[in-house]
Length: 620
Image (cartoon, rainbow, N blue to C red):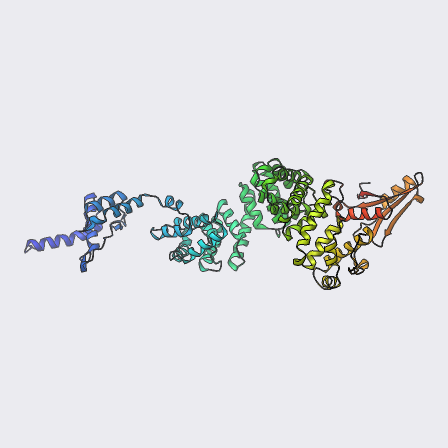
């Protein structure tokens, strides 16, 4: 038996064996507290207050026990107790600051995150917080959310400050390192926030996220796939992005029958795009129709733009969405109404009820809209061949009251809309034409020859011939400038000059003596007439007799008359002009610009034209 020589040696050996006993025996509450105190002391060491410098000990560090791999992290209450009962000399002066730090620890990270109002605020919070995996995604998403309602200039400034912030690079580094451990929705939100914040898509962090998402794509749920689809729509082309898009398309195609969320379905349709096979388009169409009862008003708006993005002209879906929008048009923001009209134009879809509801709503709330907004709408209606009578009358009154408010681009758009739709202002016609002419003359010195030709040709179609613009346009050097062969705009310029020449010859307005003649373009203009309808010809001959019907009559080497019917009882001729539906304003028999001009000119040549909407032989 060993006998200890002194009490000091016995104490030393007791401490030595006590260190090893904790490896095999789980400490109780008392021993755990003692171990924590010993650990704190060991961490402080003799250098805690060395060199006369007071340093704060790390009161909140983790204490690791070697028994069964446990890690004990003191709670906030334990930290508060320790900070109050065990303070180094001189710490009383910092008591209030310590208490505020502890109080800050009590506030959850997500609540602090909601208080951040800019990307820099979020980065400042990140700088004083130990981030978990999920915190990275939430932080980046909050940074993006804070910029949404900023003006363009403020957003640029804040994003520049974000890039210059010393913590931003570290946050991106953490996102790259922790990407393999993130949940699927965190990965999707992180990538989306990176793209929205303008992080270079060729950067290592973005490319790493793309690679990780590729590997785990099958684990993504519907919500994560929807977020990812939205993100990929906005991303630039790269090898990883394109590979992910192709993989996502395959996953989405397999999941079409299981989709239960309308927004996910629409996002998927946009991602698949117009190059999707007809079979997949049909599946998506049927799936959308099966969920039609769940469509909200925003769903109906978004479905129209989605169908346009897919080049999918599904009349059942379009009719259903149009009906919902028409019934609730007052609840649709202006930008979305404009998007609906653009989508209809791209799909060549026309719905009279929808167009009437939109035009009536804008006319009833006319004072709410600026010139720019109304001109955008008029241009879309012009492309759809729809004439919003009340809206055009109201806008013409605004122009007559303040014509100088029109910029040059606005003026050209107004002239295009009113001439193309052949809008009749009745008693206000001349006043309106005089107002726009005055604005046109104020821009003469600043207009290009092409813009001047656009404006003058529109006015001539409306049977208005302003002297100053005509004199400036019909100069030899101007005409030579407008007709350089090989120009991509040559055909359009040629057609406008041909229209102008017809109006000058047949309407016979007074012209200044200094104008130059327009080159002869008759042989260069292709015919836009429909082939003669043999069924209609046979029907007319049966009705009035073969001798009283002539067909295919040409006047002025330009105007084609389908049939001339001689009425012997009244000693006069009736001239039938068969015109396609595109020559009339949608939903009406009101002729558009070229057909109205043709009828006007034939009347001046002594004819009595009758407009007939052309129909197919099967309809006869």
